[in-house]
Image (cartoon, rainbow, N blue to C red; front, side, top):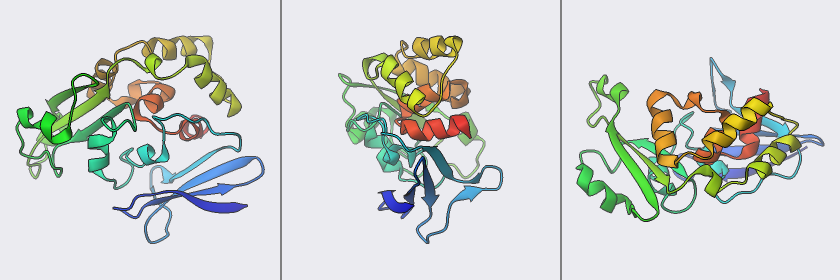
Length: 221
């Protein structure tokens, strides 16, 4: 076996440790002190998948997975990742960020939001309003213009999952394909409003830019 760090957040110190065996790969989420992160309900954070050529895509990365809200992360990354071409969709709350207390009209300038390339939606987060310590209950969703089908090839995605020995029923393939037709800002505004879990994991992974292998690990967990 061989270990190597494939991502490290310079602000939080959290890093992803990849361990390769002959047939399988493990990616563990490690705290800055070298302990493995996890929760009592979920267990230790670890992604296991087949040791085959990884699916490469400019909008997918382990840096994006670092912002999945499972552990401490850098909100500034999320607030700029879409504009900088690192992922297709991002969501972040205002409280505790550079956006706290700013007017809606100030946000596009602060975040360099170009209406030619991205769309955004600002709304009050009902969960945040229930927190008496929250100074700003608003949140923002930022998305590239277009739909998933404009950035991903459906057949390539299915083939990559097949490499991980994951196949989908014809009904699920149709559902994924239909979601790929939807405008990104509309699809993910709806999903974040009702819970991101309403979307199939492959759709969430493509939109939020998580490595396909990490999504495969969840599907077989």
